Amino acid sequence: MTFLAARTAPVPREGKGAMAIIGVPFDGTSTFRRGSRHGPAAIRWASQSIETYSPVLRRALEDVELFDAGDVDVAGAGVDGMRSAADAHLAALPSHAVPAVLGGEHTVTFPIVERLHRLYSDLAVLQLDAHTDLRDEYEGLAVSHATVMRRVADLVGSQSVVQIGTRAGTAGEFETARSLRFSSSALNMPAEIWSWLEQRPVYVTLDIDLIDPSDAPGTGNPEPEGIAARELLSFIRKLGGLRIVGFDVVEVSPPYDPSGRTAVLAATIVREAILVISARPL
Ligand SMILES: [Mn+2]
Image (cartoon, rainbow, N blue to C red; front, side, top):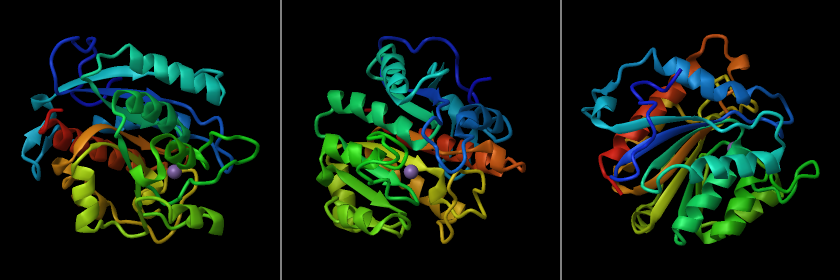
């Protein structure tokens, strides 16, 4: 099954403004409870239940060069295997295609950012997440769902990372967060952060646990006091002013939400993000 209205044909080598859905069904380092490897399939399935048209944005997915580039093959892979498989999957796409990545645990962000950082040396990363994900090491792993943003910051530079929605982490992580360009538990950014982001290519990584568990219970590590789904969607619709070169929605874990509403929300976020980003081709 493909994402709503997406074509299965290969992305044309020429052109611009194409978006490519990519699933990374990996949850190998999840510690508390696994299940996000089922995220890509659940989000694609849930997407069939929503409209292709956004009445707020007044655009439809049919207006977009949208392709579903399938899942990265991570069967039996550890973190290193996942990283090389994801990199190879991206390498097979034309560089003009904007990746729209469905996780999987948050670790899947790292190989995507690594590749985009090779294409855009001034890449900024906007993280929407309940957790800071800034540990230096976790359970013996340097690259895991709990360290992923530390590794991203090491790669692109702390001053190139903006995190919002973060409300859980260790004292040490919150200390590290002070070295980032911006870090806040709220979902608003000062004008100077917006204008800083407007001046460079941006990758957006969205951990669904940013959302309050009442709106998104299907995730591995739910955190109370979260952002409402409605608030997040209006934030996403404001991202049209940025030059977004890729994004992901990670940590949707279908086994913990028999209602399916977390996956429906994720599909809606992906639709709105695609419509906003594609309205402004790279
Ligand atoms: Mn996270």
